Length: 306
Image (cartoon, rainbow, N blue to C red; front, side):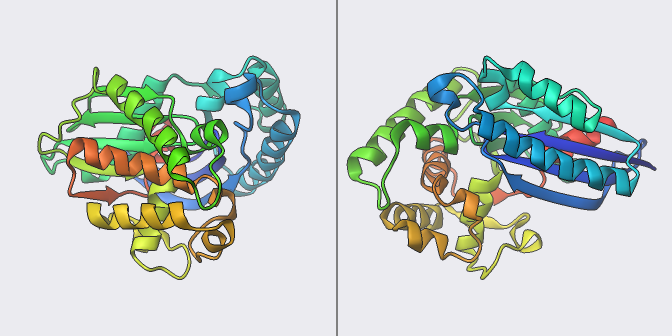
């Protein structure tokens, strides 16, 4: 067994997984898994640069993670950065800061690489079932849509994410019909683009949803008083329930959303955009339900080390 540490730094959050990995089977045994909302992508869609305060929040989380990695004795560390880092003119500041703190250089990966990690993380434990999957990873800055069975057959990363769309359209709470329509227009245009590479007509594929927007909608659908990873993992949420929850979030005030027990404070202002992406994807594909996975790009990174 090899002790590995995987770090996924996205637009909204940075996450750590320390696990014992079997290099033969690729099995991961979690030792520590955690998430910190740092909003690295703050303003990137507008300015094209990582804000100084966003960088400092991210570096503070990296310092905390460095202590955990050291205390658990991880032998190998891989740090992957996604949408916000790809888009930023000053990403060299980010790279050098992470290298100084953690001793590893962050890999600013492409959307296709992100899709590969997401698909592997979400479906590896389901391997051998013979199912066709459509894996959807709704991030802060981008959404990855991946089709495949045992491996990736088609993938597309599009620039719609819960943070990007929220900053672009600044929906109020409650959101107005005009604001919702503007967000939906961006989502539909992105899905048109994704459909050029990935079949979105359903085709008997099992829709698997990843990341915080999806898992939060699942937690609400399950009526959880607080976030519970075990209850959420591999839960199946019907389309009608996703539609009802999305409509209720659109109509909710900031305080009402914040009072939801399973809602992370860093997700309150972006959950409307995230749930709208999920809803639009289910409508476009005709999916009757979404299978929710707590295993995602972070697990894919961990398996890549193993």
